[in-house]
Amino acid sequence: MNKQKILIVDDDRDLSGLLCDMLEDEGYEVTTARDLEEAYALLETKQVHLILLDINLPDGTGFELCRELRANCTVPVLFASARTSENDKLVGLELGGDDYLEKPFSLKILLAKIRSLLRRAYGFEKDAPVHTLQAGADNLVCIDTARREVKRNGESVPLAGREYDLLLYLAEHRGEALKKETLVNSVWGAFSQVEPQTLTVHIRWLREKLEKDPSHPVFIKTVWGVGYLLEESGRA
Image (cartoon, rainbow, N blue to C red; front, side, top):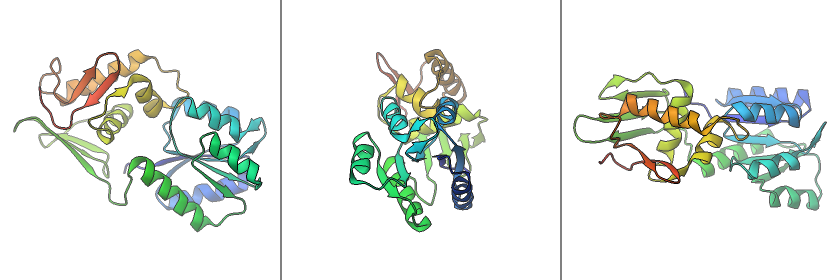
């Protein structure tokens, strides 16, 4: 199952544990961090779809993390804080936060806001979509997001985790010329130390597994000076 990934950044262990259990019961994959240092370390290596962010943290504020995130990526940020002043809310939203929830909050309201932000950012729906790529009658690729499975001409294609995540991100933004930096930040993590060459290698591996002629790809195209693009439909 291709689960949406949520990062909770909050030093309240009891609250984080409660939220983690609730969100996992709803089908999300949840990771927690107690402070900025731990959050930065996780974001260097882990892809997340949404961040639930407290403001008061042991080694700084959630405002700092949000500011850094917005310099690198557009992952949705939902502030959840006991700081309820109008000024705090304005600062959070002006720094790039997508929504603000006052503590204590209703778990039902939290879930509704999370679903709304994920739907707005990624189009996630209850029924996971199947992405289809086709170039002629003899090259059909299907990405089944519910099963996290890829098939080419009916045969299963074994993909490593990052290969799948990269292909899915390209499919979700089909027809868009995506910058290399955007792909690295979105697939490997907002503060990843991954070199551009790593992305190039993963693109080559995907082409070798999905393209009829990897040296002349019809699906994953190079956009010179920008990055890569997944064609709306395979064509030379």
